[in-house]
Length: 448
Image (cartoon, rainbow, N blue to C red; front, side, top):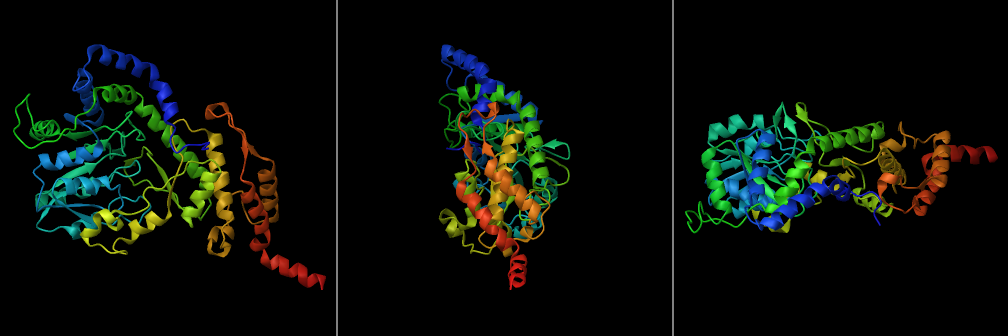
């Protein structure tokens, strides 16, 4: 059983439970299940929060991207440039709109954001849109793409599904390009109690067209002017989102504090590559992704220790069978492919405690110290963390792991207590000789 989840939705619900219950009672009493007044209220609130004139609620984030592209006239014969390191929904929405995804790599600077130079190199006469993805909680450098898009007559469509409240140079993610699509999937910083999404824009004409497309192409009942879809924001979800939006700034601050604690706990551990915040960004830490060697083994042992770590994302878009027809071979986007092999998302949410984070770090460092190939890990030779290769460091580690039990503090909402994995501890002890083979040889020589 997971002791520390990747994200604690129960703790988040506890903060809004009463407000949501009251709002749902009002919806049920009025039977305004579809397009009720709460939907329009949330759209106004979120537009004001982002700093744009228009917010159009949708059924989910994938539909939001498709609706934005279709409203802008992007379709068959067009190309849309997007990063290979993203959730498949970004490319999926492009294909559903009738256009062709053109993939580019992410920049090799531990931000994992789109490589804007690669975007410029990928432009063709068919390029109709550029889709920068605001990934893991921070904004892509959209300002570098706007002059290019203007020059070629393309639209900049932000994928803002992971950046609720993030800012770049003082401007909110979602207000940086021509139009932005976002998702309110339950695990997001601003999450509904089911699927939900929205599109944001400063254009009145684009907003009006998106409202038609999301509702069967209809500006009024039984009038259908364009071919549309059925993708409206549910009234009950709007109630949830309004309640959570009022607390989002505080929750994001809690995530930033937790990310800073992880940074400090990982300081000096060279085998773990920490995420970097791009200059000018205000990060909201939707995820805390680190790069580690032998990632799949590390993930397995973390989960065995009750830590809900995850992978975002295990396969880049171009290597999924769904997009094999694009014709990209393995090795086409080396940074995205390395990220898929090595990235590991650690538990992060506003309510996470110091004790929980310290436990995550204890287990992560111990797992890395137990690598099957210790000489391939540079940090096993020199590391400033408590798991150093010195005699005193190993003694402290041995005592720490043999006596420490995971006794959840009250905030953990779990009655269980459990030791660190016994197999992991035994492997640590056997590592002692592997870490200091020269000392073993000296002792044998002196004995002779």
